[in-house]
Amino acid sequence: MDATFTTFLWPLFGIIFLPFTTLIYVLLWQPGTGVTGSDWLWIALAVLLDLGHWSASASQRNAVPQGSAL
Image 1 (cartoon, helix red, strand yellow):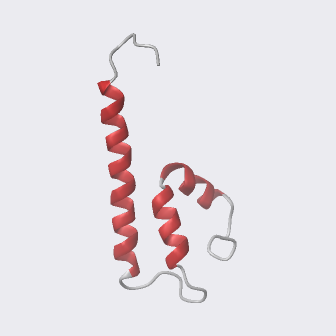
Image 2 (image 1 turned 135 degrees about the vertical axis):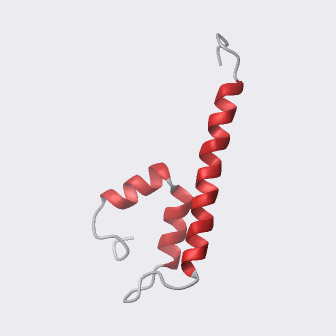
């Protein structure tokens, strides 16, 4: 991770908000060249998966009846 990111903030925000995208980015990143070519397709797919997870969580949150204690 140290070779991939120059600061601690990007991986921290990535793990909090887009964990799958951050993992894929770290796995695809290559020293000297970074992420190139079709690797961006995998990162775009990871972004869609992360956004799908966020939207599914939001829709399930609305399904909980009001006033119920968990």
